[in-house]
Length: 233
Image 1: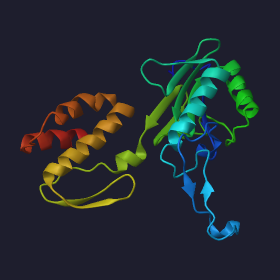
Image 2 (image 1 turned 90 degrees about the horizontal axis):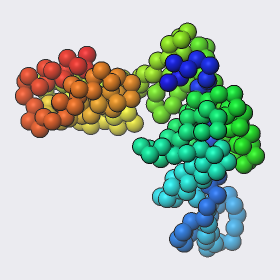
Image 3 (image 1 turned 120 degrees about the vertical axis):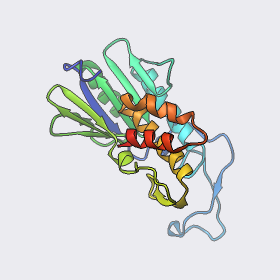
């Protein structure tokens, strides 16, 4: 949409220390031992009343805080397809939420309101980024670049982890850097079709059919492997 609406701008907003900026309180008792640097009385126990990193439900509290900020302060509506996708009806603004990152396409009025309401709510955030030919954006693992009137979205980290399926056991590395040792050809097939499917849904829709077909295969044979390798290339 950003490519066909050149008068609108694409922005990225990165919230700093998002979880601890949640406005809601924990719904259960949660206690921690204080770090030594606080120099509290020995044996002291602290009760955590608001979300911190490491608290399992902290992400839900932050999502509620940031989602409500957009619906209440910016008068946005939630998409019926995805609670993380919102749109504005008073001015032009389409927002995608991803934990502490926000990618949004906006006109001047919405961009001004977004910046104003963020500071008004005293939410700490990094300087807002604007997509230009000299300033690409990184969002949810995607690399967004602008070349004239063309905007491209690629997944370099995910693509780096793609590899062809071999007839022998190999070691595979995940996007987090974890290594799976001695992966069989069948398990390679499962892993590579999953990696390819993720890329297809994000930025390579032309590959979606082949990968969807591969997902139906439970016992891959030589022809299945050959076809998937052809698509992965």
